[in-house]
Amino acid sequence: MAASERLLAHIAADFGVSEDELLAASLLEYLKSKKRACMADRLEILSRYSVSSSKELEEAIENGKIAEHPSWEDLILLENLDAKIKKMEKEIANNQNL
Image 1 (cartoon, one colour):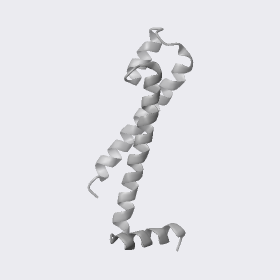
Image 2 (cartoon, one colour):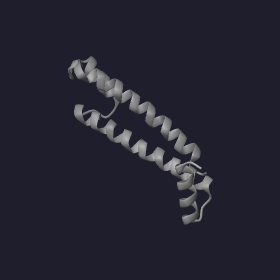
Image 3 (cartoon, rainbow, N blue to C red):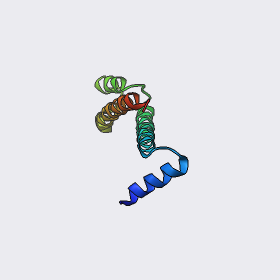
Image 4 (spheres, one colour):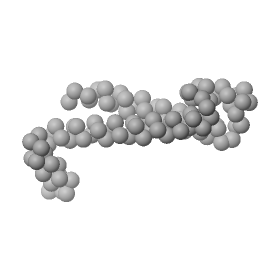
């Protein structure tokens, strides 16, 4: 038995829940934690440029209100964070009642 399997069995027994229930709850909390981290990263980028969305950042770059470098790279990162957050939100919503 692998160390992670022993740990899962031990904690499940200590808390009186099934291993499946503990694993599902753990994965859900992991997703929520990762989502919070992505949201913090997203907020940091938005705050840096005093904008409220990736669309607003893109418009500010295109209109010359914000210098292109490094804002284009930050825009790409922001769009990737938005996609990642959406994906995690979908997974969280689909598995909330497990």
